[in-house]
Each structure stands twice: as structure tokens, then as C-alpha cells.
Length: 360
Image (cartoon, rainbow, N blue to C red; front, side, top):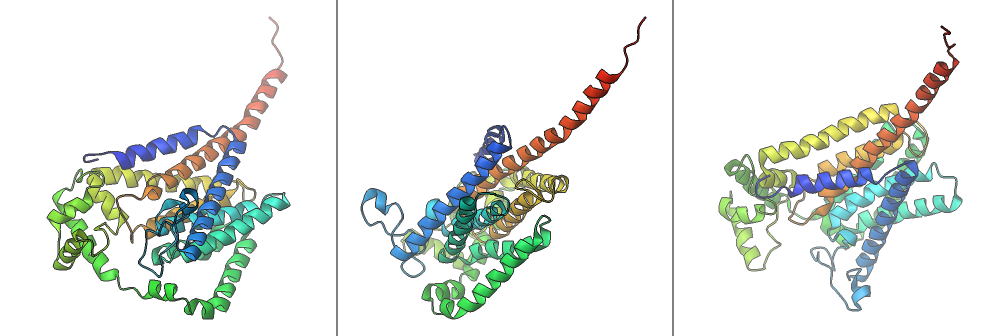
């Protein structure tokens, strides 16, 4: 809404393209595998950046390109998404997607790849050094064992193993200067102040917002407090980080207004409700069983929670990634319904053929 329909239109286009590209479950499996591969590549790039202090595309351009995020140590890895916490949320989802697929594949090579990819993606979440991104992974580890239906013992063992590894590695983690800086940074106060200004923007443009990407500009006019005003001044001088929103939900309402926000979040809520219904209809076991949908539901919930703590003008993942996954899950529901209807149709045809033909 406002001056742009980018959030809604782009999300809807991605949803329908993803949904229309899946003809059968083989295509759907290919799409899920591609998500895991992309997650693995992004995670590997982030881990490499964390250890080299250079952007992953330095290899392509054959020059040393420093990391964009220099607030922790020598810089935080960012992966393919260029934003640490965005990569964290994506890798958290694809890590558990890889774990799910590993449980139902018959190929030993595929199992090895899925488990190895999961380890790399979990490491990427750690090396991104963002507290908000940690929430998504922790939530998946803690919630999944209680919601899965097909093989709960695997997820309980996974969570227990993760807790054990975390406990054993605590001495090493506490020696990490980067992690200490991450966990002790005092950024809550300024984020609250920025959110107050964002709410001020919504108050002045309640229905259709100020337009896509316009909230940072609106801050200059509708700044709500002195602390945020000082941050704006120093950001103009290049002495502070860019003056971006720090709450995606408030950012959407500020840019799209209450009307656009209702359409956007109403659609997300509708998809979540649909996936809960789909989860009940699917079999408990199998690659396309209920646990696949459970992974997407928990990942979506984790993403929505994490979005309370970051925002910005160029965050593509919350806008389109889950909408693509929603399209895949809706298509899974349609394919499952078609499979369930085929035996019924076949029985009706057989009964029709078996009926005696009346002779006049």
C-alpha cells in the first residue's frame, strides 16, 4: 500500500510462481533439496567469511573485500543474503529441513550430505553473531520434539545431543571475544527509541503508510525522542550505523499502513491456519508427512518472532522466502488431495461398469 505495493505484490507473485512450478511430488522434492543446497552454500560462505574476515565474493573479484558488518570483532559473516540475522533464520529452517529429509531417504550419500549440511548450517548460525538469529535455531531445537509425529525419538535425541554439545563447549565459547561482545552489547535502549519513532510514523500515516522503503526518511520528520534524534544526526555524519527500523512488523505498518498490513499479515495467518489443517491430513511418516509441515510452521513462527528485533530497507528474505515455502506447502496439500481422490474415482467407475444394463 502507500506509494508502493512491493511487499504484497512481490510476495503474491513469488507464491504463485512457486506453486505453479510444482507438477508432482518429484518436483516438490527437488524444490526442497534445492532449499537445503542453497542453505548449505550460504552457510559455508558465512563460515568462511567469519574465519577470513573477507566477503565470500572476494574470490570472484580476486581482491580483498571487507565484511559489511564490522560491529563485532573483525566483522560478522553474512552469507549469500548479506545480512547476518537473515542468513541465520534461513539456515535454521534449512538445517531442520535437511534433518527431516535425512530421516526418510534411502541413499547413504544423501544421508551423509544432509547431516553434514545441517552441521555447517548450525555453525553458520553461531558465527553470524546475532542474538536475534539465535532465537530461531533455539526455538526449533526446543519446540520440534513436542510437535513432530513421525519419529519423535530422532528429534528428542537431536535436542539432547545439542544440549550436551553446548554444555561441553561452554568453556570454549566463553573464551570467544566475538560471542562476549554479541551477548553483552547494550542496544536495547536505542532500538526501543527507534521503535517509538516508527510508531510515530504509523500515527501520522495510519491507513496507507509512507511507502516502501520510506520509513527511514520519515524518521527525520517524525522522530519521537532526543536519543533517536542524536542517532539520526550522527548517522548523517557517518558516525553511527544507518538509521534503519529495528522492527520488521512496525516497518511494514509504517510503509504499508494498517490496510496493507492487514492484507499482508492476514495472508500469513491464513497460510499458517491452512498448514495446521494440512498437518492433520498428512500421514505421520514419510518425506511428505506431517513433520515436513511442522518444520515449516515452527520456522515461520520463529521468523515472525525474530522480526520483532530487526528491520531495514533491504531485507529480501522475510518478504519472499516464506511465501515461496507457503506455495510449496499449498501445492503439497493439492497433490495429497488428488492422490486421495483417485481411489474414490476408480471405485465409482468400477461400480458403474459392474451395474447391469437394463434391456428394454
